[in-house]
Amino acid sequence: MIYLEIFWSFFIANLLGYGGGPATIPLIQIEVVNENDWMTLSEFGDLLAIANALPGPIATKMAGFIGYEIGGVLGSIVALAATILPSAIAVILLFKFVNLFKDSPKVKLMTKSVQPIIAILLAVMAYQFFLTAFENSGVFHLVLLTVLSFLTLSKLKVHPSFVIIGALLYGGIFLS
Image (cartoon, rainbow, N blue to C red; front, side):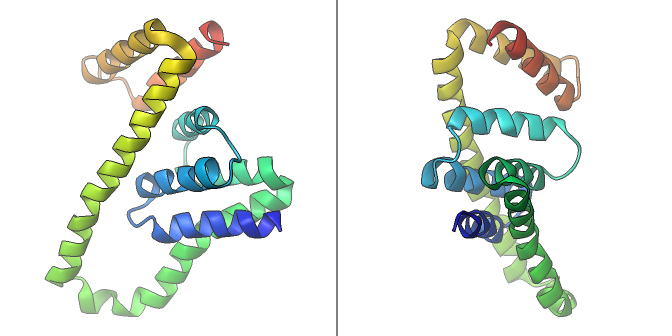
């Protein structure tokens, strides 16, 4: 039964996550944290940070890890399959219609209309992570990491993956 729950959770999140990884992350969070209680918000945030630091698609890395944590190797395979299947099915079924609708104003409008929704979902998730970080690490560490991250990203133009790795190291040393 757990494998069916894993499959359904990741399949739905990736089926409805129009727009790729950033759109699916809040949906995966809802399924994993809110609906099934497989992880806490803090654990999900840690996993998201690690998945962002590693190369490759975020959703598949998260699915593989969460599936493994919940159902072992088979759980990982099920979660990965559920993550990949919606896109694979859509590509196979809709490939014939790409040329017919690629210049359609309605399709372009639909794509533009989804962008604010994705932004709101990501903002809500960031706010939830902010509150969790504030509760878990305190105001000093939160402000310090926020300011240092902002400065290194905006002023020094450091790649975000290095900022994430630095924050992980800081957390591992000072917050564990």
